[in-house]
Length: 259
Image (cartoon, rainbow, N blue to C red; front, side, top):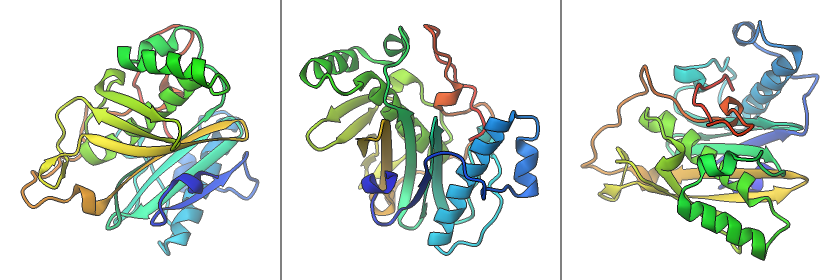
């Protein structure tokens, strides 16, 4: 499903539930050895999707272990992203020579718990979501906004090594094109044709009770001869993932879990 909103240079594999054939490399199994069974199965199916996608790129299979702040460490020359929600797991990968930034996210098509929208949305985004709810009440725009923000943050951290807060990106949703744009509101270490790469574009899809979103920045768009090198991820930085978020009216947190 998620491949429908990704460019051809990206290989994506998804699964609607956990798969019995999804086994873990012994080193991967160590990562989730203390997790409950459902979490281990979710983790294994996400890794299975990622390895099947890498096979589509003809990349040799290798264990996908967590790196800084538990983001998956992809093989040299590969960029990728893994996502999971109730009843759905997916992974997308591409060669770094083709794609510079890549992320995917999946969410159940359901409203956010009370108070969460106000915690994550800028004033302009709140107005947008409320307006869209009047025009197209069949879509849970609050949940979509959350997913789109997560997609941006998951793309940003692996490349920049810098953390984004909810207020650090402003999302605009294009309903007719099923797309979105994100204006990053903090200084960007990434460059596009001599200018900061602070406007990112992606796509979203509503299907089968799921909201899925994807963002892929072609490598050619992020190269610039005069750009400063991007600092690698280091201690004290992280990125947002939905499973790290505390709902129920509390402010979301940023302690990144293992994907």
